[in-house]
Length: 112
Image (cartoon, rainbow, N blue to C red; front, side, top):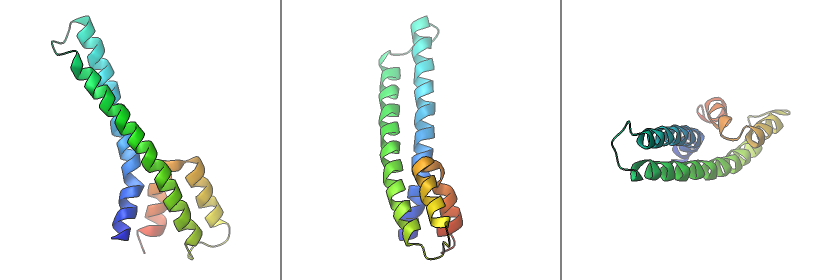
């Protein structure tokens, strides 16, 4: 169960933020299309999509922070990491945040 949780935490924040940004772009394009009169739709639809995308980005940020804490603790306690590999992984979690999670999962957690 713990490995499944690490898998979720490694991939969800990145996927969530990407989907939310795409949804935000779609809502803005839809908003401009409705204002220009080229699309016949309710003006509330782009607003709702925009708020959903903002909530998704906030959720992704929260999971990125949570993942940074969890993966940093895992790297610190990982006995298979030797030398300065622990410091390199912890530094990547701090600087690259959710972009480093899938790489760490692939290299260090997937095989365990």
